[in-house]
Length: 273
Image 1 (cartoon, helix red, strand yellow):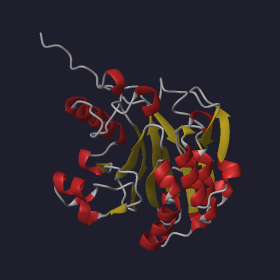
Image 2 (cartoon, rainbow, N blue to C red):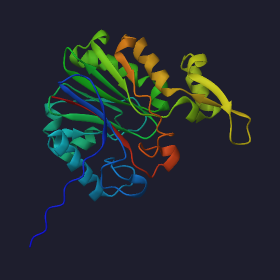
Image 3 (cartoon, rainbow, N blue to C red):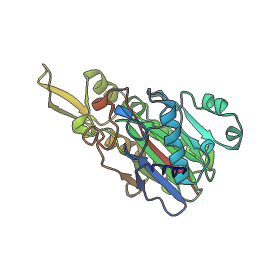
């Protein structure tokens, strides 16, 4: 007698409310096929996870979202500020050509329906932007280097150039990332933010250090990115913050500082219906 087909696992997602025409979420570590420091749900191809597990995890997500695999897009991020637009021309390319176009990209945007765009993080800050009037979206990866280089501000400008978006129409969601009290940095990182003109009294704080130094600087990346979005013209009332610290909640969300770089990644994404 033929055994019953094993039921596919479903990724456990943290959803965001952008309205009925949008599906937006951050993945948790639960509900997938990866193991060890990649367990359970990871689709990042660049962190050492097995190809089979990644494929099965992608398949499960696509089935859940009701899309084909070629409509699930994530760039290869390099902590810079390059932004790519996902359009029909890019979707017509082969899978290899599409990935080449998304090499070295840290934010992707689209106004195409039925396409899920997202970024990969594990302590860095993921940001979703949605223009409710023009039905356009952007997913941003903002690590400390991208934050210093104001990638969030640049993404708002690019949405204006690409879709005619104006900041007052944009809703922003800041997803899971490392919190102020968990993000200890060296003096060189503090100085990079200071030289870039950030208000260090707002985003920086000294905490007792665990090593030989008595105190170390900490940087508040969620607040820093929120300030950038407000400075770009997005209403403070339209900026939401998940308030999830990946370092503290590493059992449910990947944290590179907890698990090392050879571990899984959170996928924060938006799908226009």
